[in-house]
Image 1 (cartoon, rainbow over the protein chains, first blue to last red):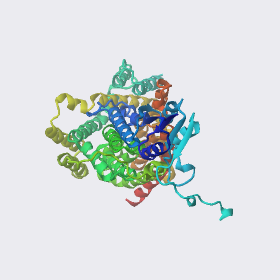
Image 2 (tube, rainbow over the protein chains, first blue to last red):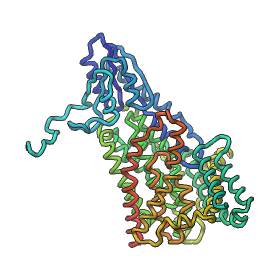
Image 3 (tube, rainbow over the protein chains, first blue to last red):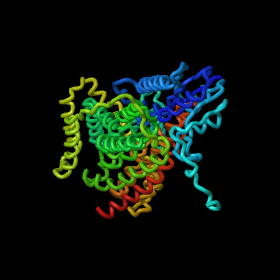
Image 4 (cartoon, each protein chain N blue to C red):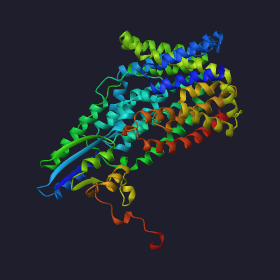
Length: 160
Length: 409
């Protein structure tokens, strides 16, 4: 069995914990992190929006380097928490597409809800929603915190 | 014929600035275009000289501000802001967003939109990355506030600098009238960003193992900036042009930071200054040959609220088509006739409007789409959706706030 665990900044611990608890010893685990290229693009190419300005790049490490360094550090932390051998993959690009590509050929994709902390469609952000809807394999959807109770779903008026 | 030629030259300047071909740098096209228009007699020598004399102090002002902002960077102001934001966030993304708002609104208002885009946004990205939290809400906030928080002071945006001279307002009165629109713009951005990223912002602590050290604030640089601001306010009282105050501030900053001469020249971005001067002359020629008449027909006169709203909306539309610098140069002479209220309404349009696209104008966006047709980096649907949520609301609300301020002050 091949499982891909999507490691995302704010929700990764829950995914790793579920992988650790549920995956059989024999499973080949891949820890996947994707850095969004569009956000970095806005931050690192200011000249694109200031007509006629060609500012010199600021000193210090380029933003891509910082992003890559933090991605590696995050994957290392996730690997330590998983406490078993696994492959780590750091990708960069449009997040949801990269997740799909990385989970091609896998049997299971583990990802977390990244929206609001109540039951319902808003508990899943747009990128996770895309990956969930298009995943080419089985999916395990994890709550990053204790799942909210059923009372967080508002009853329709006629049932109140 | 002169109409067509001057418009073609203007289009060439804008095309060069958007496409940035290496064989035809935008500043050379603008300067060359201006020279051609004078050489063939479409713009008289005296006309060109008058345009340059009008723009000269503004461009000098701009150069001084660029040097001042660069001095702040050298003094470590933006690194300190990064550490201050990280500390103040206490590991919570929603608090980090609030810190980013404060930093971006302050930087934009005092050191200009350019400082926020060029110097602060990379720091915000790095800060969020180091805190191991999703950088998207924070970078988007920075990017939005660079435009919408640039309403406050004449020094907050090059468009304001250009309009400041034409408006005839004092520095303090400009800021006083724009304070309410500025706060309204900030409030709209806060509500929209907070709601749009509710999911990303509500997670508890991003668990970074890195400790952030308490930043050492560059007090000297902050004092220079503060005194320069006070000087701007005083300058109109004692009758000195504010460009001299800016020059004095830049000079003190340079004396303290002592950048290498080459770096100092680069910090003032001479090619950008030439571009602004050249574009100003070219727009003057196009204005004299029919463009101003055409724009005049589009814009209402008077300072009633509906007229101001229409000025803001038309200005935002032109800014979105072309980018806000040429939009300001084109519209300003027409609205200046109607007085300072119309000039400030135009600024609401050209400053808030460009948030519809992340590159400042549809022209730039289209060009990037053509060049990077298969490049996923240009997929910016989410940014555009945020723009649609904030820009129309801010245009209406900020113009209404401006109208209110004009009644009261």
